[in-house]
Length: 144
Length: 144
Image 1 (cartoon, rainbow over the protein chains, first blue to last red):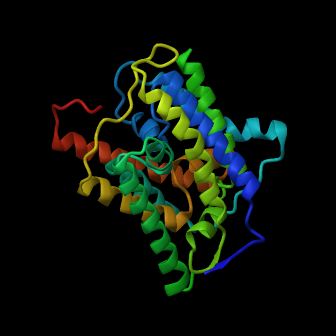
Image 2: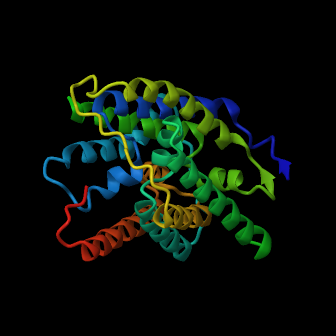
């Protein structure tokens, strides 16, 4: 392993993380809910009566975030190297997997670890481990 | 009011994702590539988010209703089973393939990224398949 110090952005990473944590805090303390994106979004597909508006509002806020960000600074352009086929397969696996596993990076990672949940720790270790392994296989065994 | 705080939480969450670099798949894959030139930034995103989250959930845990009088709906499940681990592994593979998890994909969608839209479409399809399979498995049970 070698650390890419040129790519390392500790201040932005930490500040962004604090904002993410603050959003999760607002959602827990004011709405009494877990800010888990896969759960909020997935719940829209099997809607329970009276359970729709807050989900739509959260997702709208998330999608509108680049617009709000643009008020303060220029939005950095994301680099998406995955091809179309890869995106479809990856998206499907993320959708199905997060619903079976009851959470993603936000629900298990941020909120679950903050709640000191062993269940979320196990999930986080599983998806991070699978993420590390997948990148290793794609980049270093098949040469990317 | 809960709709407004939900919108606000989504917005702040998304701004945090953009600022931290999480909304850039190339940055995420740089973190997941332990064997390559490793970018440790995202570990700090998690540290910042969980740092705030620990405090917030310590308060939330002691309450039965939120500041807005909403019932506290924090997870009570502690079960660690095949669904949790298998689903999380599946999610991690998809995450490692494209560099997107659900929140960042929605934020990148808001930037007008066509590739993010394809990913989100496939992700919703995966979530839809989960709903269908769950309904087939337990047709009468109301899904929470």
